[in-house]
Length: 105
Image (cartoon, rainbow, N blue to C red; front, top):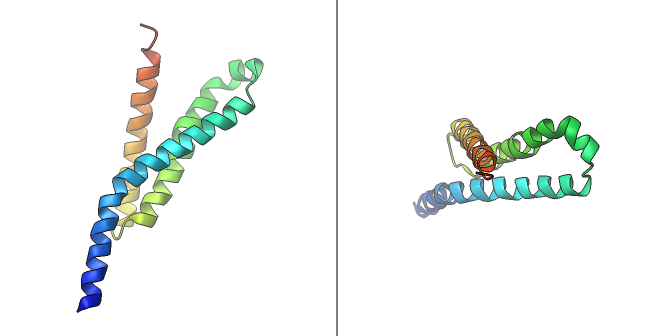
């Protein structure tokens, strides 16, 4: 009987920590991609592949990382939580790109 209470407590903790872990994973992955992009910056390369790099650095790689972290942390409904994390990551990407596109005004 005591083991089930411990497992339930651990499951509750995992549900509570899920959203901050997803946010932190997205932030860390985005910052790592930005640092790597900064190290290999070349204006000619940026002019030809800039949109692909932004799409890859801000959407694809963080989405993959967030999906797998959410699947590891979630106690159950792992596929559903992974899909919700993907949608959340896409919404963050849209918000970030929208905000960056309107900074000059």
